Image (cartoon, rainbow, N blue to C red; front, side):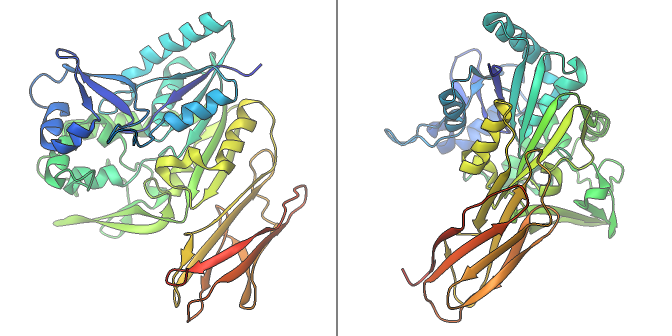
Length: 421
């Protein structure tokens, strides 16, 4: 029988409730329309920071009538459709990573007592995966069998770095207001990239980490929170004591470089090196090990916010949770249509049941009456950039894969030009 599953959501993925009025503060349509009030309510450096509490996982946001954009509802429903006992666990994403680990332990103990199981499995998205690692750091892996990491920023990210320095665009909220509020969250500092070898941060053109090299720190940033985050992030155990499966996206434009310089503001660069939110090098667990087992699977052009909605990712999750390892194949174009005279991307991931890349696979894309292009392995997956036709026309395609130990049917279909439907 499969183990019960605990779902840990990512940043913003847990509702926040005013414990006095009982009103949901985060996230509602009214809150989006009155963003300034919401931001002032959830910041931790003014008023009564303990008045707002985390509650349940944010499954969906009701906007108009039956239109309720899915947040984590799809993930929990999919896992439930497999016959699994699913428990979403809300996290106060503003607080330090270890803030909720005692409650998580209590929750897991309750699940095991209720179900009679010996272990649970943890499926964690984004920031939730770092909370899981803090849990393992304190309680070990005695009660957990498997850990599925979905786009988790294991060695930090740049988006929160940007939020701390200058704010970010989020649901139409004021960038300067977001910046001030982000500076009050210990979690935002803990998400700074801490491994200089990942190449996510440079200072004066030298690879560094923003905890050791603080010349980038602008006025208003808490040096105490920065110091506390350094202890939390940089000293976090790199070994995960349970069976671990990491799933992540590639090739999307992502904030992937922060470049600081003496006497200058930090500059942030968007590069095709992630899932749109987390750089691939971080989501792949750079420097992370597992004393039990560690496997990696890629979803080419997988979008961070709904990484768990892709069919190929669902297959990996199902096979992992049911202890049925199988070969993995996933592929995608960079978009559903191409622009004439442009360069167009395609990528595929081919792996054995243990999640090891089959680097001697032969992956080829044939565009009928135009060209045939080999996809080359780049460290994460197989990919190619194609110079598209000068004039708009539809193109029949066939993607073929030849690899030892894996049978993949040719993938066929039609590519359409953006102005030639």
